[in-house]
Length: 311
Image 1 (tube, rainbow, N blue to C red):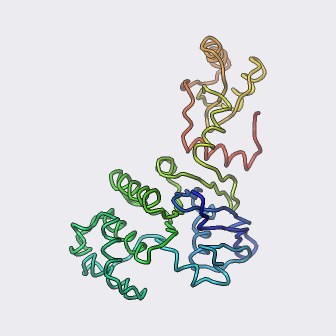
Image 2: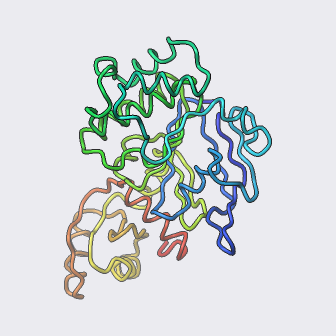
Image 3: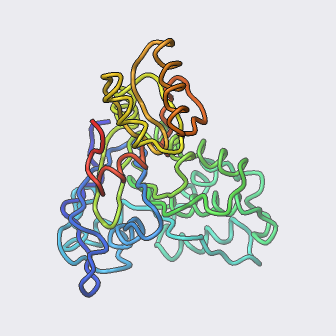
C-alpha cells in the first residue's frame, strides 16, 4: 500500500456554534480498508457527507485521486463509488435493469462494465431476477455493484452492514476484502459495529465528538494496548483495583474498559484476586490479554475525555 487515494486535510463542519467535525485529517491508500469508527453522532456520517458533496465544507479540504473536493469536485467524484445509507432500487425491475438505468445516468455505455461489477459482487446467477425477490444482503451487493460501475479507485460506505444478519455480514466482509486486496480499491467504511470492523479493517480511525482521537494500523493499536500488560483482571471497580495493584504490588497497570491490564506471575495474580475480594471488589474473571476492538475503542475514547488514567 503506497498510493494515497484519499487525503483529508483539516476537514471541519460547523453547525451554528457546534463543531460536528473538528479539524479531521487522515489518508486512505489503494488496497486499504480504513474503518472510521465512532458512536452515533460522533461525526462519521457528517465527514462522509462532506466527502460526497451532500453537505458543504466549513473549512479544510480533501483530495481524491489528487483532486480537491472544494475546487475540483466533479473530477474528484469520477474516482468515487459510494453507498450512503441504504441503497434504493426500483424493486419492480431486475437487478440488471437497475444497473443499466444507473449506468445510463452516469453516461456509462460499455456493457462490460455492468457485467464486470455484477461478477465482482457475486450476483451473476440472480442479476436477472426482480429486486423485490432479493434479500437485504443481495440488495447490499447490488448497491456495491452500482458503486463499482464507474471503476472507482475509492469506495465510501456509510454503515453498510446495518440490518444484515450474521451470515450477510460475513459475506459482505469477504466481498469488501476482495475489492480492496484483489482489486486494489481504497475503501472508507464507517461503522459503530466494532466487532465486525475488527475482522475487516487494515486501519482504523476513532472519532468522538467530532475529533479524530486516533488513527493507526489495527495491528499496531492492538500492540499498544497489550504492551501495558499480558494479563487482565475483570472487576466491578477497575480504577480502584488498578490503584491497589499499582501501589501494593508495584506493578504498572492500564485500565481498559472494566479490565485492569498488567504483567505478573500466576502466584501474584492469585494474591491480587484474594486481596481485591477482601476489599469488597467483585472479580469477574482473569486471564491472558486478547484486546478486542471494543476494548481499544473504549480505551481511546475514555483517554481522550479524561486523560490517560493510571499509567
